[in-house]
Length: 464
Image 1: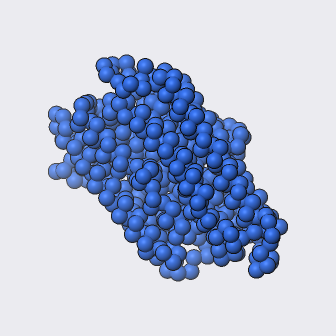
Image 2: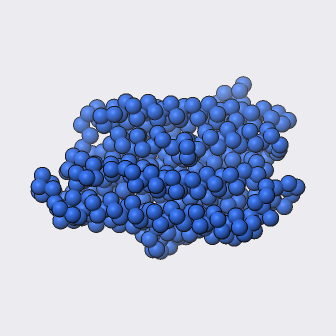
């Protein structure tokens, strides 16, 4: 009901802020409870609400401290919504930090055997990164005519030279941990490997998108000059993400860890789209976040379904499950096909849009664009190799005798899976279902970047 109400009152044709709410919180510090939605935040709020709702439904059988478990789920969902909607830097930062606590506890209490290690690694990485976010944000707030925490006012100021570059790098590292960006990604396979399936749905479906959202909101909107100077480096990082994540996935014999490495690879396309510095690139980055949120949540949910039956995630210890769990097999294969960007599914549209954004940007030299696309295409080749080989080993081959008699998906589980799978098909055939929510805003941001390109006097050598 909340999601329906939110979508009904949001007009995607407007590129400006809507549903504005401002309340003085700590006037002496200039702090406001300031929330608003635009095309960048609205789709991610809807994605967060949907994935959280399905996570609650997927956690139906949680028996250990259920009250605390569901309270933490709702707490992290609230913090995520504030992150996406906040128009005050300190409010944004507080929500960013508060979101870490429930996720840490959800992994540390309800995770696997190495849950304490995974949860501690997660909190150390993200908390350290948050220090850079705080320093960079406060530096922007104190820079210029007067102190302000309002994001719109911060975006209206100019931050040139080394100051802007340093703040950009601080934000890039801080937000890059959440994305996750190589080499700051190593917490993710451990967190996914130990978290239960519903929490993995949240991690992959929503938490990673906070990093991509923040890069657009802060690095692109507030620091366009620095973004243009560092866009080639960001594109290189995106390529490394794509290829390294794909290669690392081959080395994983745990289903969830392989999917986690796949997430690292796919989020590399978000970096490429952001680095493309045009409307198609930003549109592709947004669509990739939405698409990956649905697909990854679906993959982890279906993985949780057969883990509940087999009690193992080790790929060598599974086999022949296609005949035992035919519905589970079909849905897992469908989500894998969506993940490897099969035409007709959302993953294909988002990644193609990113490629079009790179090729259509004349600001980069032709050689740089060709090299970028060729290297990124390596990831597209590797993805079906590690995903389909996993499907073959888990669902085909000799049947493990101990797994010969298992019950397939329940109606509740089937409903959850379909709610995630159907939108990936709908977006694949009708991309405007998602792009219509944010096109006006991404066009506005791209126009700002275009103006910055036109007025720039010195650009890196990869620019024409």
